[in-house]
Amino acid sequence: MSELAAYNIQVQFQDAVTFFGVDPLPAPTVGDEILTRVNADDMDADSNYKLIRYMDLAMDPVPTEESAVDDFVVQLVHSVGLRATETDGTYTSRYPVTDLRRTTPCKNGRVYR
Image (cartoon, rainbow, N blue to C red):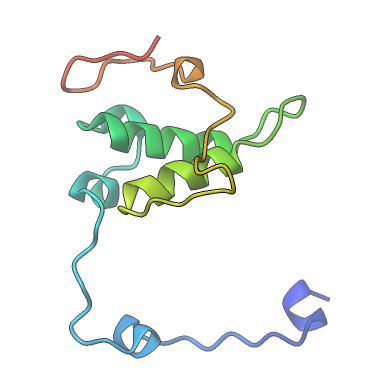
């Protein structure tokens, strides 16, 4: 039995306008390349590279290391223009950007080391 059935969850498919109840839908708040490119190394903007790279780390965890899901969420929150706060007023990542190894430079020439 699937988890959906076990918890009596039913999925109903709807178009985006019906689901969100807004017509027309607002424009995305992220850069176009986030919506059109698949690989972090293909990003022009450093912030977009970081978002996709953190997502990659979260989706493919190293068994002996702590999950990068929290780090991805922090970057995601910032990328959509929100400024989330914890009790001390800041969110931080456990994986510093220096731990993100870029195999090829961005189109703007930057390489993370």
